[in-house]
View (cartoon, rainbow, N blue to C red):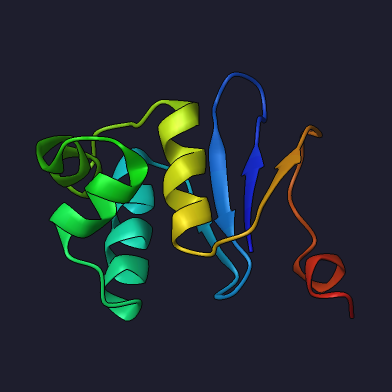
Length: 99
């Protein structure tokens, strides 16, 4: 599962499967690259499914910030769940796990 949080004006992605907070676009790109490899997609294959160019996907994986629409497309294609957190403050990882 991947959460999008909006603390202040910063967009934060949180990967729940690995309980990894993703603070920067390059971290999001690394998550996309890792999930793409794990699911056996090539850059061309994932880009075609997301209706973006391979170059755009490469830039995202290298750290360029995607649009929210593109981020959601990529997360859905890679079977990563998405939720939006609208509160400020630290996330309680035990609550996220359901402990």
